[in-house]
Image 1 (cartoon, one colour):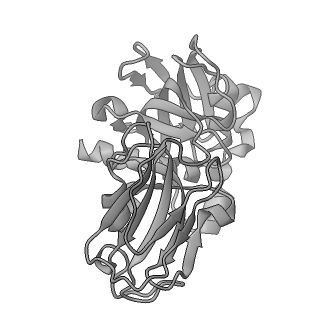
Image 2: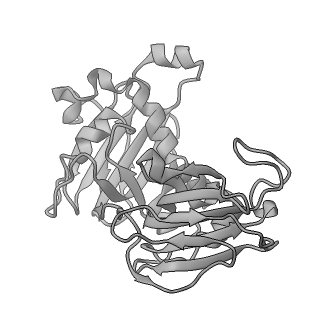
Length: 312
C-alpha cells in the first residue's frame, strides 16, 4: 500500500517527465490508435484492470488507445478530469504494477493542459465520462535526457478510467458572512469576485498559538489534509501591515498540495468548507521560525486572508 501511495503521489512528476519528448510521434495516426504498443487491457471499467504486456523490448514511443469510449460528457482541453488510474513499469521483465487508485480508493484529478504529455492532452479529449484510456509514456527524446543529465525512466503504462470532470474553481469566496473577526486585524469584504482588503497594523500582541477565523463560510465540501487546493490569498506581517505576497495581485489563483505548505496552513485550512474566506494568524513555530524568507524577517507572525476556491 505504501509503495502504491508513493507512486500515485509522484504521478504528476511522472507525467511531466514523460512530456519532455512525447511530441515526436506521439500524436501520429499510428500511435493514436495504440497499434504499436501491443499492450492489452481487460476487465470492466470501474474495477482494477488486468494488463498483459507483449514479449520483447518495451515500447520506445509514447501512444494512447481508447479502450472504452464512454457514454457521458466529453472532455476538452482545460478540464480537470477525475480518474481512477493504475500504473505499471514496463521494463520487459516483471512489468510490475506501481500503484492503483482502486487500491487506495482515492481517485486522482489531472488537469488536461500543457503540463501533461501531448499524447495525454490528445488522448483525454477522445474519451468520455465512463470510458477507459490506455496510455504508454516512453522516453521519446534522448536529447532531452542528455541535456538534463537524467537517466532514462522505464516506460510507464497507465490505464485511466474516467470518473468525471471537476467543476471549475470559484473566482472568490461565496457564502454567508459570519461576523467573526481576529482581534488586531481588519478584513474588508467588497463582495463579488473582488479581493478582500487585509489590514494588520496594530499594537495588539499576536497570539503564540494558531488563530483561524471564518469570515465567509462556504457551502462546499470540507478540505481534507491530503488534497490539492486552489486558493486566492494575501499575506502580511503582524503589526506592520507589510505585505509579502498576494495571489490577487498576480492575477492568478495559487494551486498546491496542502501537505506541502507551512504547518499553519495545514492545520488552519483542513476541515474548512470550499468557498470559505478565512483569516489566520500564524505564529513563527508554525511558519518559518528562525529562518528569514524574502520579505519575511525571522520569528515573524504571519497573517493571511485566504479564499478556498477548490479542492481535489
